[in-house]
Image (cartoon, rainbow, N blue to C red; front, side):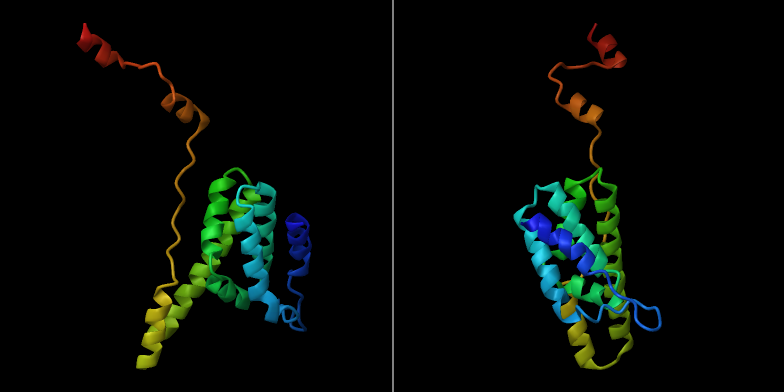
Length: 171
């Protein structure tokens, strides 16, 4: 059921183009937060199912095609954490890797733009809002590299190995 629901949302959330050929997404604007929240909830509930993680990333990526929706994604609890989780669970899924990274970069840029606007303002209320926003901001970092199969095989080997220098020292 979750898979079919996410699959249907992939096409539903693609933004339509307005008269200026811009992506507006006006028909679903009032539902974006709920769509994002429920998508992330499905991804959390089935956090080991790569098909659901893949479809969830596609839904979030299609939402991020509308610039105003990126800000909503940034405020959706668990969004960035789930995208990082998807990148770790699906290291070889190019679509998940590209979608998750692109969304996180867009959220980071939107956060930085908001910070620049609030620092240029001199009012104290803007600074208070900026300080409250800092709790929710993040810095995008590279995930830990996934070890290669050979490295894992070597680290789990129970046979001790000696380098050429160590074998000469023991003689």
